[in-house]
Image 1 (spheres, helix red, strand yellow):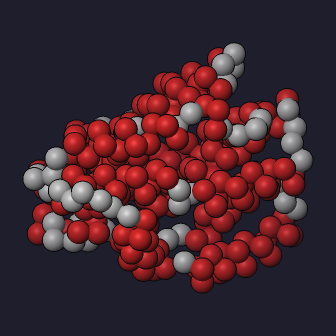
Image 2 (cartoon, rainbow, N blue to C red):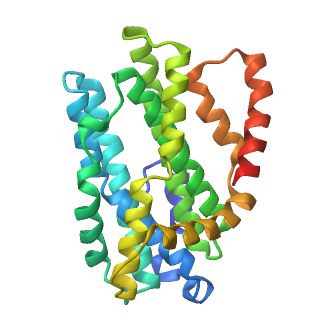
Length: 275
């Protein structure tokens, strides 16, 4: 595929590298859970311009971090959303994407405020590592589970970007630990707080607005979302990279290596059982 050429040339991929004209619609078009998952993901990703502005405001005065957020992280996240939108519109052309996104933006904007970020700059960067762990693992799962080859390629590109973003946030986190150190316990608490929040408003509101736009229904409840989420958990048990995700989550806590070696398989196994 064209996307493999982008990687071989060592340059950043673009939408032009994704072979949308080769999408095997018959392999995926009848799978409604894929539609909901991808459309909702496109909403969340393309909304990242607001996330980037909020983080930029929070880190005002730190020109290096603000520059990375504005010129690297933010644009790449928005590109993920645009790429997913194009995929969704290729496979499900009847979907009114803009209508669904407008509903999501109206619902979610009040939750996306700089005032809701971490209590310190150091801890907010630890929290961003959690978010990037979740996104890179999520797209890794999609790449492995996808019944359609072009989607697998696209998800692989997004996963690699998200891993790069994790590394960027972790680098900034380490810099802030030198300037504004936080205890291991404080970092662990912030990591856990963000882990608990991963399945929060953005996912629910995104899926809700996909449903309202697609089915022309008048209501979508938390119960409806739980039913959908439980179906996705079947994929997670099989395809989610639990152990790599746990390693990424524990890295900011900086545990002693012997303890980390013991905890990683235990936590990964427990997470798999919980899911």
